[in-house]
Amino acid sequence: MPATGKPVGPNPKRLLKRADFLAVRRGEKRRGRLFLVEVLDRGDDLAPRVGYTVTKKVGNAVVRNRVRRRLREAVRTQSADDMAPGNDYVIVGREDVLAIPFGQLKAELSRRLRGTR
Image (tube, rainbow, N blue to C red):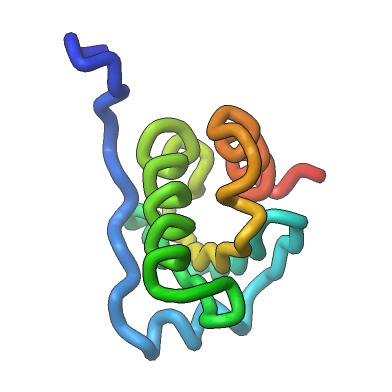
């Protein structure tokens, strides 16, 4: 671990294209109170890819960006190791992400990415 105290490791690639997001919708859905995780097995051994979605039902742009930033940071600091190679993940955030402690968010996200209940 470097002097900043933040883990350094391989960050997952980002999903950026709409077609990729729509493709992941065909995969497995792991529902939770804080977010929905959609997982699609691409069938290769390349690095995992992740995308983030927060709908307008959650709130205005400021609130949606705060939810997205918390989810990105949780994946970057802990949950990237829980992602299987060759999979695409889309995390659909909900407003409850802002109300819980960050450690609890990381644990819940890690559990959902591994596929355990």
